[in-house]
Image (cartoon, rainbow, N blue to C red; front, side, top):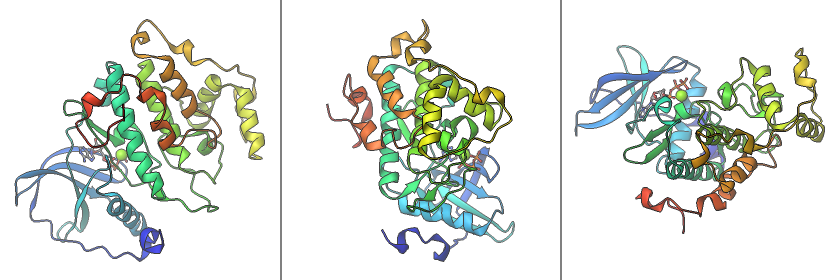
Length: 323
Ligand SMILES: Nc1ncnc2c1ncn2[C@@H]1O[C@H](COP(=O)(O)OP(=O)(O)OP(=O)(O)O)[C@@H](O)[C@H]1O
Ligand SMILES: [Mg+2]
């Protein structure tokens, strides 16, 4: 799509004055920002004010460029303004506000329809993003705003997102531990869009099996171990061999042999009613060590999981499944 699309370092940002936005309450924040619910006093519309911490200019520009490129896309959070406050010398992004249902309150009681709806909307966003050369690199429930009552989903937090250039190495210190793909955990720098698919698979497993987080490691090595203990060491070794990777570790358990656990083993009395054969088949095709084997977002959207009892009644948007 050319340098005008991806050359964020040479982009100029017009910082407007922040006077029309008022803070209502703090709703979040982390390493890179403080996030507030706000109101646009010119029309009384709610908004989100993401006050950026003074990190590298380059990182701020990348987030803005990516948000500008993607704003208007399906289920992508809308960037409405960029403002600079002289007094506090802070820069903020003004975005669409979503009434988010807390993951801790929803993961254990989603219906099968809601799971289909959630994943369909998330994959629709990812299909759009990936087809435009961008990897999100931090897909996790805290970065997916889901208004359960209105069935609205938006992918947020483009702070770690990056443009994909074939052959160019990427940083592996991205994503949040429980959602890190094997490529990050073994230090493979030529990863691609399939990283977001792994994270989506982790979310799908959490929803289906009703666990807050499906792979829950104490640190990166333990995270890899948790994955190997499910997908099995045979597939892991095949993956390392295919890409000529060598695992540097002091953790003996990582190099021991672990049998692959069939997905059906995670079906319990508690989740049986929401787990179908189609669901396990799709999950299996998202959670593969080898990123090249994982379905793309477009392929996942075409999976029969979404065509049986299609949740079209829940959608009410243009982005619905076909049957
Ligand atoms: N548009 C929005 N609507 C509702 N809540 C939002 C919105 N944007 C952000 N939030 C809330 O603020 C939190 C932090 O926002 P965001 O992830 O963009 O910031 P961050 O500093 O990059 O985060 P982190 O370092 O925690 O990943 C989100 O997890 C969410 O709870
Ligand atoms: Mg975040």
